[in-house]
Image (tube, rainbow, N blue to C red):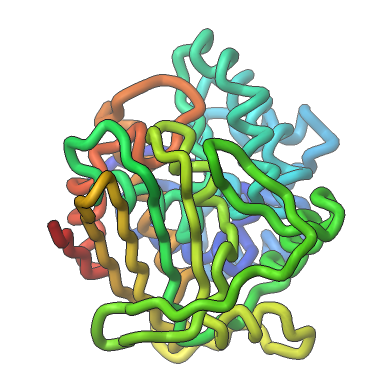
Length: 343
């Protein structure tokens, strides 16, 4: 769709931000390049002649107001989101435009739901945190798997990654989250977050083909433990990660992602296997694709497109599964992922 609408991308020069800028252009939007580093913005702009460049800092509200002026929406790609989310949301509220981010930080997403829901409703606007591979994607899959169920006993989201070469942003965000929770791990059980000092369980998960059964880290909690229970009545939400990917994430010498195609994607592949259970019944949603950072771009841009064209279900701080038609949204990503429901 040729919209021609301006969308500010804060953190446009980051690894994920560059994918988002490219996706916006492909979808007919006009990205406004923003972020804290003016030199990096200029370098990015050299690859996209004609785009507006507006440096901004989260500790300078006037610069954020300038960055968002005239934009139809803002996408925040700049972590750590514990630092950037609130100031950019405040700027979006002042501008009266929707805010969407790609935060994977559990605590930062909790802060967004806790502190901005009432103000978003009062303003009649939309704030969507975690509209990314972790958080939004898992929530869409869990919501699609639920179907007409209004509640379930448990939801399991298993991430089968062929490997995980983290970006500098991923490492920085992870360090902030670990510091905020005092080095403890977190899981969602009995309807609430629980912080623990013990080691997570080691399990095997029966991924569908082509991955097959793999050793996983159980209770490897991602943003899904915030997004899924924000609107689904599921007291147990567990996430899992393949052992190899978890090991690469934690290793200090794992290199950053390396592009292997013309779109800048890495060779990483993934299978996300979601199982929801209620009583003796079980439902499943499976998605397959490539490059968790690159696939975040069509996720977040599809979200912005649906918000700006009125294809939403609420005004509030809302997760992807609550605000969008989950199966329809996932089918719209067919150029980037394969998706199937198993009931």
